[in-house]
Length: 186
Image (cartoon, rainbow, N blue to C red; front, side, top):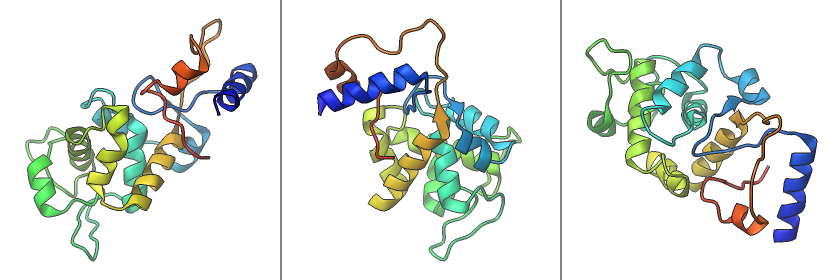
């Protein structure tokens, strides 16, 4: 397995491709993100995610896409979840944040909902790559939901190759043991 990982890492580095990351680093939008995410939302995701050290903005984008397909405003589910990030009333009451600075946190306001989601995900460990899946599970207790959000989040962000820079030092084992690198299925 380590030999296969080393070979794959060598191919990625040789091709000069971006590296998909979660849990830190400067993430630029991938081609998929640019194609799917409305132009005005990426800056909002980045701003809200910055309130939780280590949480990638792509996580908020993936949750938003999964919950309401980038919906805005008053959206309700049959289960009683509300707003663009689909909060249950009790959860929103506990984790609400005033994202737009108007003095009121509203579940149907996109900025408030994004900052509230960032707060909730962060409180459950989203700033720590080792706890990211658990944080998403707390958002929705469905393993297929967790898998979908993580996969989507991973596909939305890339790091640009650094000219003359090194991607990693050490053995393939050190790369595999690095908590800031998340290997996922494509």
